[in-house]
Every structure is written in C-alpha cells, then in structure tokens.
Amino acid sequence: MKSLPERFSWRVYVLFAAALTAAMLLCICVGSVSIPLGNTLTALWHTLWKMEVPAGISKNIILNVRLPRVINVALIGASLSLCGAAMQGLLRNPLADGSTLGVSSGASLGAVISLAFGVSIPGVEYGGTILMAMGFAFLSLILILSLAYALDRSMSTNSIILIGVIFSMFTSSAMNLIITFAGDHAKTIAFWTMGSLSGTGFHHAAILSSALLICGGVILRYARELNAFAIGEDNARHIGVNVRQVKLIILIMVSVLIGVCVSIGGTISFVGLVMPHMTRMIVGPNHKRLLVSSMFSGAIFLLLADLAARTLLSPIELSIGVVTSLVGAIAFVVIFYRTRKAR
Image (cartoon, rainbow, N blue to C red; front, side, top):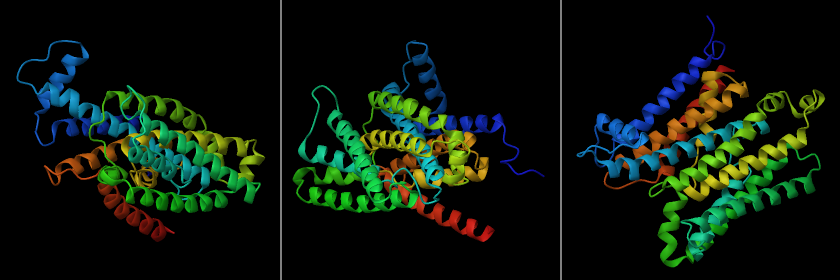
C-alpha cells in the first residue's frame, strides 16, 4: 500500500483548503463573545454582496475586530511556514527556519527602536515600525552575507548559519539594552516581542498579502531548484543550477517576507521551524508540493494558536508567541524523536 506522499493528489489541497476555512470560521465565532456560525456566515455573505446585514447580528465584532485579525494571522502563519520550508530546503538543515539568518532578529531590532523612540510616518498607522523592521531586515541580510563572503568566498551553508546565529545573539543583547532604557514603552515592547496581532486591521492584511504574493510567488518559482539543493550544492551546480544566484534570490525574498511579518505581528517562534517538518510527513519532500502545503499548515496552526491565546485565560490575552513556543517545542521534540527512531 502506498504512503500518503506517494498517493498525493489535488485532493490534499482541497482538504487543506477546507481545514483552513474551518479554522478561520472557528476563530471568528469563538472568543470573549461567542457568535453562532449562522450569524457569522450571514454577516460575511451580506457583506460580500454589499447587502445590509440583518439586525441582531454582531456585525462590528465580526467584520471590524475578528475578521481582519483572522486574515492577518493566517497570512503571517502562511508566510512564516513558507519561509521555513524554503530555508530548510536551501540550507539542507532541519533546524533552519526564517530566523536562522538572523534576519528576523534584525527586523525585531528595527521595530523595537521604532517603538522605543517613537519613529512614525504621518498618516500611516505603524508605518514607522513597518519601515524600520523592513529596513533593518535588509541591512541584516547585507551584513550577514557580506561577512559570510568575506570569511568564505563560496558562501557555504555552515558559514551563513554560523554568522546568522552570532548576529541573532548580538541583536538580542541590543534589544535588551534598548528595553532597559525604554521607560514607559518597555511594557509595550516586551509584549510585542512575544508576538501579538491584537488591533491589526485590513490595511495590515493588504501589506501582508502583497508581500506574500510577490515574495512567495518568487520562492514558489524556485521549487525545482530547491529540489536540486537536496542532493547537494555541487550536484545542483552540475545539473545547471546557478547556486549562488538562486541562494541570493531566495534569501532576499525570505528576508523581505519575514521583515513584513515581524513588523506587524512581532516575533513569533517555531512556526517556520516545526510546520514544514509536519507537512513533509504528509506530502513528502518534493518542494513543488511542500511549499504550497506548508503555507496551508502554517496558517491553520497559527490560527489555532491565536485562538488559544485569546481564550485560554480569558479575559486575559496571552501573547501568541508564548503559545507557539510551548506547542512548537513539544512538537519538535516529538518529530526529532520519531525521525531518529526511524533511522
């Protein structure tokens, strides 16, 4: 009997899409105020066709509070999981994810500086935070790649990972130093660094969807090359893959996508590390299937994590990063144990 990866077909995508839809509806219905599924569907249907929402339905909660948050959570989950899958394939390292390069830490440092010193763009909510996070993500990438090239002209995977880890340690120290002198902003910054999507709106969803469409589209375009990287960089080079160019393009796309996600949702751990592993067990290692499936699984996981963060200790809301770290750490240990046992 064939395993699931061997029997993979378009039906798996349909199941993923159905699960994502169910998770989104669940997150809209459940919260501090429970809303019947029928009311939720009615509100969404009438809004879609620009009809008046019937009286008695919590239109404001559904459309202005929960719907934008749910969309943002799904987009960030999909983006982080896609970045993790791409990084694991590119670096051929099971511990790699979007933050391996240190770009996530760099983006966090930029956002923390913005929050601490009140950097803003007139007329654009959180514009300063988004701009600073993206800018520092780019600067981090340039610095890390420059150091990797200076130390190792071949820019090997081990060199990039090592410099990324060292850079992450440096930025963590810098953020702690800034938080120490942040005064009244310290509590806001500390909560943000653990990940939070409360208060996000449709304008954030527009930014995230644009970044995912552009950067994610480019990453998906290189699925075949990522498959070639699985057999080694030298072998990939021998079959015609421009290793340095592909590596640089994917690293840039991952950096931009992570910079946008961090600027809006804060630091959210383990999504990009764990979900590609779990997805790989279902669909197999082929990146043409894995990348798309990882986007679905990452979105579903982060939606459920955000739901748990909102409801477990209601009316107190946990940081979403706390939930993903707890669940992700346990899941990763289980995955690692099963993988080692199978060998």
